[in-house]
Image (cartoon, rainbow, N blue to C red; front, side, top):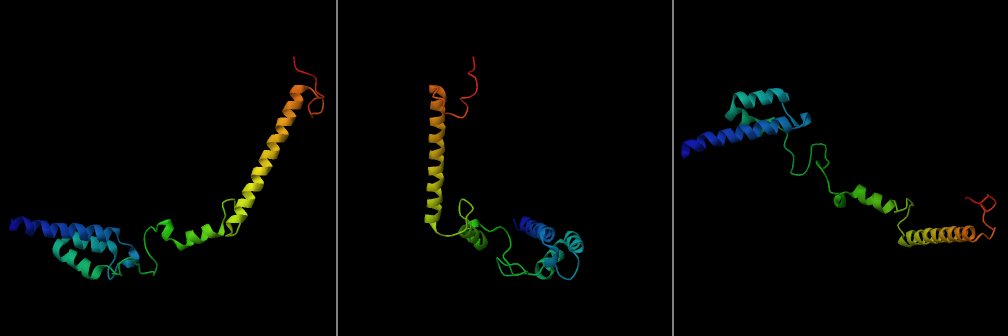
Amino acid sequence: MLRVLMILVPLALSIYAFIDCITTDEKEIRYIPKPLWAILVLLFPLVGSISWLIVGRARTPRGASPSGRRGGWVAPDDNPEFLKSLKDDGKDGTKGDDPTDAAKNDDALLKDWEDDLRRREEELKRREGGTGEGPDDSAPPKS
């Protein structure tokens, strides 16, 4: 069992170091270029892997990058810029944080739709009834 561990541990270490070397951004690599680090890890698995992990990559605190901003994807509810954009833009594209403004706009829009629907219904009734009041009643009847 000890022989298996003596083979698997350095193999796992060299695989981890190689993948870490390949996926690391060029800006975070120290001392020698990225391709040379990869070759070093492949040619000398134990020494190359340990040297990569110790000195090859600029280590930063967990969750931070060397540029000073958080790396990776940020959920929308954790992203202050996204949350600010929600406060700035209303549902209908109007600016403002007041929910009563949006409700008033919705009520006005609903009233306009209802008025338009009533107008169309009355126009349709006039056409069907033949009262002569509609805008298209001057056209000859279709047979």
